[in-house]
Length: 163
Image (cartoon, rainbow, N blue to C red; front, side):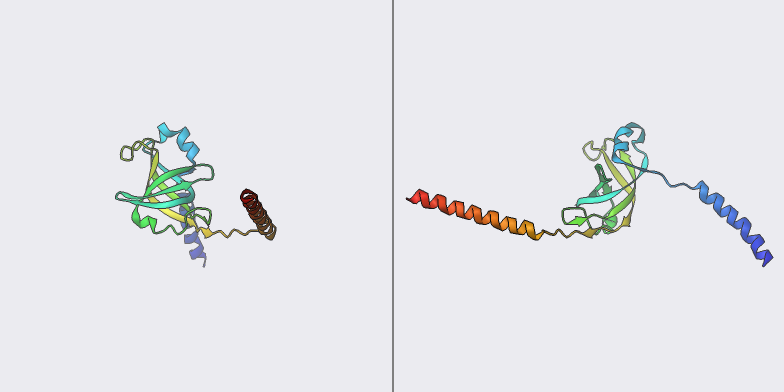
């Protein structure tokens, strides 16, 4: 047992040392991309956010918009990565949260000079979901009252016009 612990302890120290040396790139926001666009141009960045809108298929790949909570940016992804996206954010859905490792383009030559990201890797880190919107009974009753008032007003206007 002692020999096992003696061999396990150095291996554990080596693993801890190596894992501390490997650091994940920090995520950036759209505001940081705008603010540091000259220095980040052509650099690989990590970006996280909610997929919003539609997945648009094009010949060079698929376009998605990713919203980081304040702003959104267009991301070109591989068609096989588009299959990972189940929900896109809209009135009826909360979109999937994704992490994208991508090359940042301040003014992309192939996409009309637009600022965009070209994804190297896409990972879905949180699944989206459908959102159900409920209308309270008070609002439904108020809508019925307003509709009836509008109909009565319209009929009275027609009746007076025909007199």
